[in-house]
Length: 270
Ligand code: AMP
Image 1 (cartoon, rainbow, N blue to C red):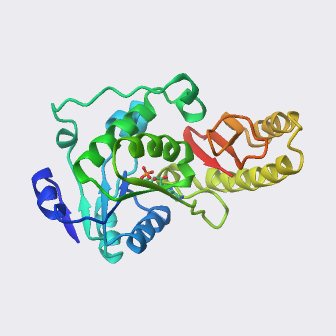
Image 2 (image 1 turned 180 degrees about the vertical axis):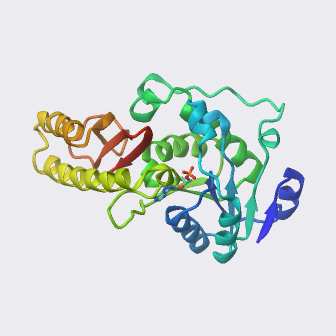
C-alpha cells in the first residue's frame, strides 16, 4: 500500500489509473468501511482510501474535537486489506486558495439531517467536490447508513464529473446497531440500549409496511421510545428513496432516525 500525504505525490501515483475506486472516510475504521473497500476492490482495478476528518462538515466544535481517531490501527487494517493507495492530506492541502463555488442546498433538500445539522452537507459536498476534482475516480463507494449523504453526493458528483457514486449496504453489529466510528463513544449501557432501539425500529418499519395509511403509528411509537428509553429523538420519519419526499405511494421507502444517547448522536435507516 502506498501512503500518500502530498497532492503532487498523489498525482504521480494515480495519473495512469483509469479505473480507480475511491472510498472516502474519516478514519477510525470498522467493518462498514471494510465492506466498502472490498466492494471497490471487486469492481475497480485499484482502490484509494482517504482518511480526512473534514472540519467544514462539523456543525458542533465539540463533535469535531472528540471525533475518534486511530490512525496506526487504520493503517494496519488497510495494509491487511491490500488497499492500493491511502491518501492522508492535511487540511491546508485540501482547502487551498483555489476558488471553489460555495455550495448551497435548496429548500427541498433541507430535511432530515440537513434540517438539524446546519452546514453539514454543504461541508460534505464541498470536500467531496475537491477530492473528486483531484482524484478523478471512476467510482466512489458510500454507505447506505448515511443514505441522505449518498443521495446528495450522487446528485452533485454525477452531474459534475464522470464518476459514478455507488451505495453499499449497512453493516450492523450483532445487536443490530449500525456500525459507526461514533459507537466507540457509547458506554456499555448505551450500546445495549441502542441495540434494543434498533430492534424496535425494525419492528416499526414492518408495521408501517403493513399499515401504510396509518399516519399516527410513527407518532405513537416515537412517544413510546422517548418514554421507555429516555432518549432525545431529532427525527423519526419515512421517506421514499427516489426523491426523499414523504410520498410513499408505490415507492420504495425507508424509516429514517436520528437520536441522542447520553450526548452521542446516532443516525440510521431501516
Ligand atoms: P465515515 O468515516 O463515518 O465518514 O464513513 C465513511 C463511509 O463509510 C461513508 O460512506 C459511510 O456511509 C460509510 N459507512 C459508515 N458506517 C457504515 C456501515 N455501518 N455500513 C456501511 N457503510 C458505512
